[in-house]
Length: 259
Image (cartoon, rainbow, N blue to C red; front, side, top):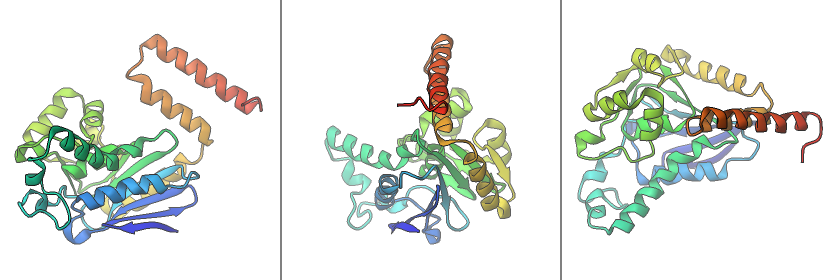
C-alpha cells in the first residue's frame, strides 16, 4: 500500500514493515527542501502498526547529498536559496534549519526500528540521512563522505551526534574535516555499517534483518531500545536501575498485570 509519493519520496507499507524510498535516481537522489518536507511527512503518516522502517534509495546511489542548485543565487524554483537564507535573521535561520532537521529526527522513535539500505554514494545530507537510522546495511560499493566543510558549511542535519556515538570523536572529526570517502570495509570495521553485502544481495539482506527484528514481541523490543538509547547518558548504577524498572514492567505485562 502506497501512502505517500511526492517530491522524490515514496512511502509504502506492508504489514509491520514500511519502506521509504528516495525516488529521484536521475539526480542520484539529491536532496531538496521538498524532499525534506516529504520525509518529515512520511514520519507523521506512518501507521501505528509499523514496527520496522526501511529507508532505501532508488538507482545506483543512496543519496549524493544536497541538490547543488540550493547554492546558486536563483536556487530551486519556489524554494529559498542558501544565498537568500544568509540574509535572514538568526531566528529565521534557526527555524529553517530546525524544519529541515525534522526529516532526519523521527527515524529513532522508540516504537520502531529503522534500517537504512545504503548503496553507492551517501554524501553529506545522504550520509546524515543514513546516520539518522538505527541500523545500516551497506552494499560493498558504498561510499560515505561528509563534504559540508569543503563547502564552507557544517553538518547540520542531526548527523554529528550519531556519527560521534558510532565512531568516536577523533575519527568523526577526521572524517568531517577531511571530507574523505569511507568505503565498505572501513564502515563495517568502524561501526558505521552493521552489515556489508554484495550489491545484488542488499534488498534480501535487509528483508532478512527486518524479519529478525519482528520476531520478538514488540513491547520487549521497545523497552530494550529505550534502555540502550539512554545508556550513554546514565551512570552504571542508573542503568542498573533502569533495567530493573523495565524488567518489572515486562514481568507484570507477561503476567497479565499491566495497566
